[in-house]
Length: 278
Image 1 (cartoon, rainbow, N blue to C red):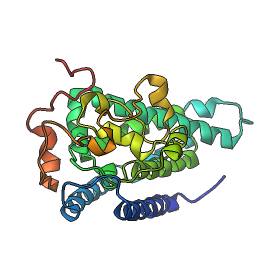
Image 2 (image 1 turned 90 degrees about the vertical axis):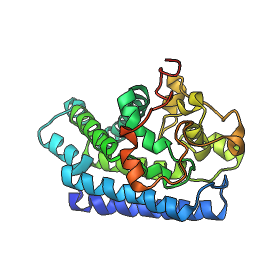
Image 3 (image 1 turned 60 degrees about the horizontal axis):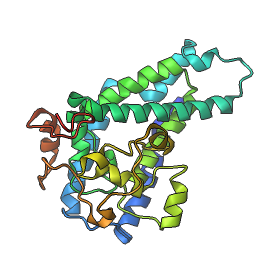
């Protein structure tokens, strides 16, 4: 299957904006929880961080993950390039998407387990509200490290560039979906949790409770949490009663500068996985 790599940024941006707008309108029309901060200022700062992240990536890694897949494929790198020639293309794509999603799950666990990485990831969890912009709120250094990890995984795996594009679109789309301030009827949510991470499932991960925030690490596929023993079905206080954020970081005015310097100031708290009782 052939396609033009020049279309990749437009495909990713178009799919992201479409899902973002749909989820933003949904949570405005039928929010699951009442926000405790003003949406306008919070959105401006969270989206401002996205602009910084995007510009930095375009300077440091303009070709992105898809470009790395093209590069690896041209040199025959990776496990998937060693399988028989008659191995179906669609099977390579499906296998690559699933494996890359598992790698992202492991990466997420690592950012909770290693204190210095947690300091970066803390920017994502310090949001005291939970809505569609929380899903794109990451420190620029974490974004760069994530790209390095993803590039290494792609070089080792050797997935088709089409698979990486699909993975990127699905990852961005599901992260936008499962961070939205919406809820689904219980029966639908329980059914969907077998194939995709839902907002109610991922909201548990943003609980102020340490045990709950160190669970439900999946972004797209929900299987890894169940298989690896990191799944929590519901927050102990319920979705209306739970507190979002971190105990030691409760500032309401979380402006762009504050988010950029947060990893380098103060105490990371007791949240790093495995260090709760240190």
